[in-house]
Length: 242
Image 1: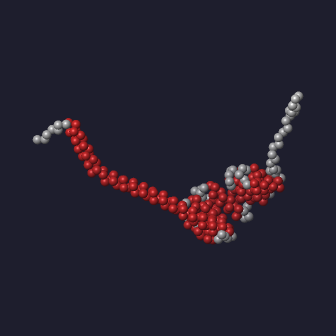
Image 2: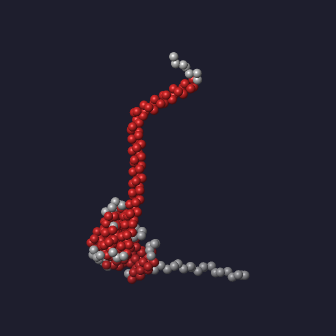
Image 3: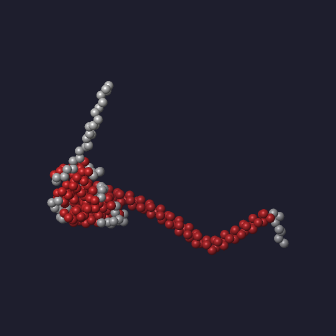
């Protein structure tokens, strides 16, 4: 016959421990395998994310070295070599490096006298909405500059209208090309006013401002700014001692 425990508290603790052990065993039998699989999948996912991060960092370093090599090739007047070096980047998934690579290829084509290829490369950047707007603006300016002699004045003005209307780094160059297009179609007043806007725009180099002032004056628009002179006081000074 079982002996009753002398300490009821000890007996209750033993019962609780037995119940918890039985509950744990039943839980592991029913859910243990799925739980372990879930933990394993989570760990594998985390490891995969770490690997992906590492690969991204390595890829960025590789892309940077490739692009730097292409720039050095352009500086050394080897445009074909520069274009070949960035061929993979121009087809890649990184939007920024893709844009830069296409612009290198555009510069390379322009240096070799291949205007059609240069225009196509710059156009690919200018029309890609996944690319940073500042790069798109530069590409558009380069594209219009290469085509300037073959485009109608109206086409030049229409393409650059957005850049001329919006203050920003691309404004001065876009306004200058637009002013030249206005002059080409005989609209000297509009051209002069554009040059005046360039001379007054913030962030414009002094050399470009000086050129804009001269061009505006040639076209009959006064863009020279004179410093304000201090007006003499209307109240006469009082002599000391009076």
